[in-house]
Length: 595
Image (cartoon, rainbow, N blue to C red; front, top):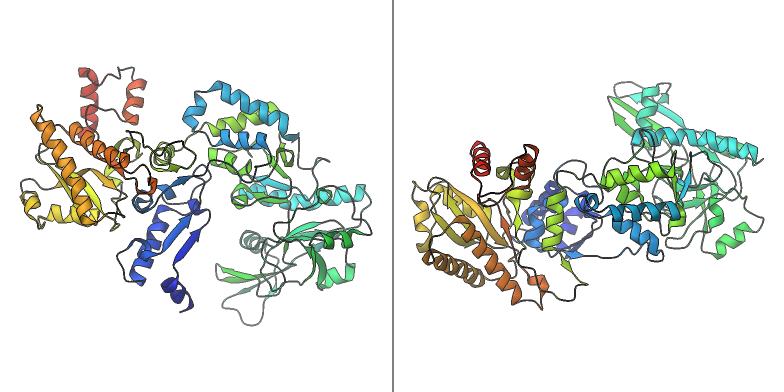
């Protein structure tokens, strides 16, 4: 009931890093809010404000967030041009700008690649392994795969022990108590000897099997309590007694205040001085008592409930690229780029090189700097199947606040038939009630077209194909010898318009079509060009209010145009790319008939 009350009464919802949501999850949010609040308005009338970096890693499963039909239908997209995190380091800003370039553009620009090599080699730090003396235990060691991160976390304890012994620094290793209990068993949980159970706890709980304590150790909280919050930095200045640690008694640490700078001495091997407590408290660090977890720190799987008793801390030392996404790391970062631990896509490079505030805080662990930079560039130049479509959405739909004029270029239409990597029939039509003006073509009689407007495009197309359209101008679409109708294009982002304003766009489109017919025939490419002209003229008349700009989506390709896939296939076969050539038209026609 508490959550229901929140959903019913909230006016605004802020979504940070919403790019990690899939298009399907976003559609589910819309369905929940519309049904719960009993309104046809998108997202139940809630104002949604989200931030994302389209070049970063997307959702694990499902379509990318920007491919949601709600994005270009119900939202205004605004480009953010500069990195606030790297505002004080011009070189890091330039490096991050290059990592976010289109892979297709970067492939064709050897000067930009050479400039990237120069910037990285001159400004980042390089070493050959995580055990290097230049890297302290308080560096964040980042791996590209979870398995490698877990192995590095376990190795970190042994590496730290060896380094502390060489420097004669006292330490203590706290081993976790792992317990399990089968669901059907009587009695309480017992200490487990099963390695499979321990691996399961490693995977599902944030507390590690072993924690190493020493003066100057930096940790991250793994739970929320009344005294501290999850992921808050905690510093140990004095090593507690061995008895207290063995018994799991509360220990005293200092917690960092969010937003405060962290002294760089923490990231070295220097022991805290006698006046360290006083100095850190003066900088805003606060003493806090950390208690060991109990049996409630558990998880259930495969018929077993397993628990881990350990201090709710984890060393800052190891992480994966995915876990660092969205975080501003105050600690230096060490990224391994060699062997099997290398980035395999652009998003990984974008994330790992944008977590810090300056270049001096970035370390690359590699066999040689030249090889590491080449591996980074190789990943940056490797597009995914969604790259072209996402870039088109950002470039053609998003508003740039830094542009000298709000005038939209003439070519703003999104060509789904060209950009969508799967069949066009798999592309979902918008289900929003924000209003559309659309173009239909009869699949039985391709010379029959219809331009109309509706609140909900998806429902309206169903009515056309069921022959149930009511309205004097649309009656001829009910004739069964024209059904089914296919959507060729639609104008969207019309949520600010009334029905009469949408009809004005519809009439303008029909008027241009009639002029084209009088000039000597009406082909599909003419209809699409007329729709783009309507969008362009409307946006020209609303240059002072760019948030009211509208856009057009094309879901079909005239034979006069080549899709990206067709160009690639023709190039591979050594055929001419001239669409007017008979050989080229035969190949395209054959492909489209089969599709």
